[in-house]
Length: 220
Image 1 (cartoon, rainbow, N blue to C red):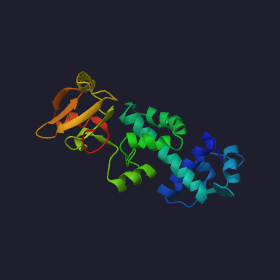
Image 2 (tube, one colour; image 1 turned 180 degrees about the horizontal axis):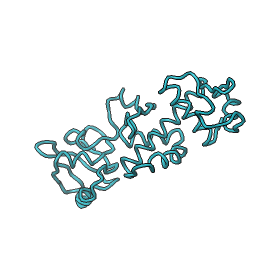
Image 3 (cartoon, rainbow, N blue to C red; image 1 turned 45 degrees about the vertical axis):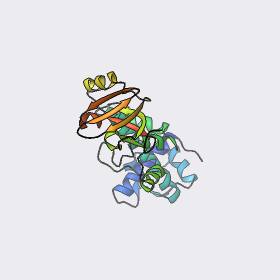
């Protein structure tokens, strides 16, 4: 069963109203819709929600779908803020459009890329996905800042988190570019890493800006 973007937005509002605000139902006025709304009718016909006069409630299948929609929206916010450095009102506006592109499977890839964040930029909880559970059970962070690696542990650079253009340029001059292989040589007294045949030393603050897609416990 498929639902359109408008229906996903209704589910998202219902989830926030019930799960985070403690209501059992949400009024049509609070949702900003009319009872003849086509997206609402679609959700009712698919068994996602129920309506009693001017009140709408989530059903179990709809709750699962709504949680996934909220998860995609808040991951989109994290991606926009942390990686693309989007600020202000553009964050929510852009996330509303971007979340619809993060269909099931892609959201887990974004979550892994970001290191399984627990909170969105507005300090609201991001519903965990299967990828989060698997990471907790395995004890392995698939994407980690360089400071989280063990000596001799390697991986490919996933992204640079700093918003400081001078720091980014300095790291890039060392060959710290997404896709390049990096190995942590030592973490004390400074963080020494190797890219290709060259080794570089940076402080902890700089090392925390380098996110690595971890390969294993040692060089391969």
